[in-house]
Image (cartoon, rainbow, N blue to C red; front, side, top):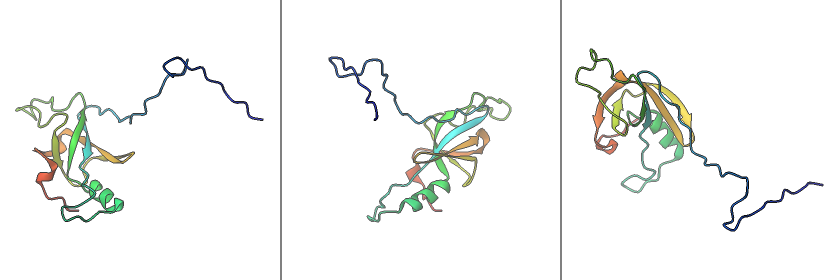
Length: 134
């Protein structure tokens, strides 16, 4: 026979002695001169109304050439000799990089990339400004 655990509720319907856990995705913190980038993922529906399959969206994200900078290592763009004009990008910038650049890290809902600071090719206002082909 399985013993049921009793719970004591307070007037505001919270369990006593039980802390709610927040399930937030934990992303790696880039070290050194590395950037953590979330590759651009196309919308599920095209302008013409065609719904794309999940496999197509995943292939496109792997082959994506642009992404959003999520975090930067402490040494990013610190080398004044290589970057005399300062950083090429900052957190929350959309950047362009080589098609299969960086290390791919799988996360729930897709993947992220770990790039070296010198792998950034350009900065974009919006990822939708360029044509995405794979």
